[in-house]
Amino acid sequence: MDQSNKLSPARIELRQHQRCVVPPACLLSFAPFAPTISFNGDAEGEGVVINLSSGGCQISSDIGVNVGDAMSLIIMLPGEIAPTAIDLALVRWGRERHFGVEFVSMGTVELDRLRQFLASIPVFE
Image 1 (cartoon, rainbow, N blue to C red):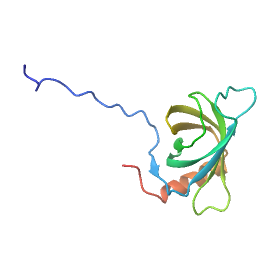
Image 2: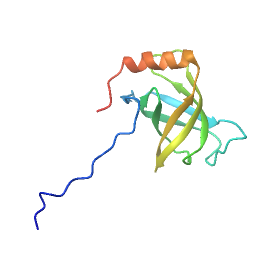
Image 3: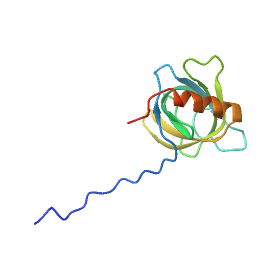
Image 4: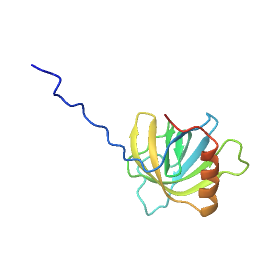
């Protein structure tokens, strides 16, 4: 049977924001967004940011979360004096000790600070 006509599955990129590699010192903490929004994981926790964009990030943490959990984040970007607060982030995927969040709401100052930081680090390959 001729295998040359078989097509490999195409990978569709759904990300709207370019991801950047962050230094290992990029730490964060998270807590449930509000008592009225579902949060099925642990109450709060800490983690390390693996990659970052202006629209979300990948986190490594020992704390369990579930897809759909709503949380607030505080990210300590390397070289920054003040932490960057993300008012609302939603867990979009998770496996083992890693999960990805989408940033839904943050202040203008925080978004500007995040964009300036991202402009100073390498793009994820």
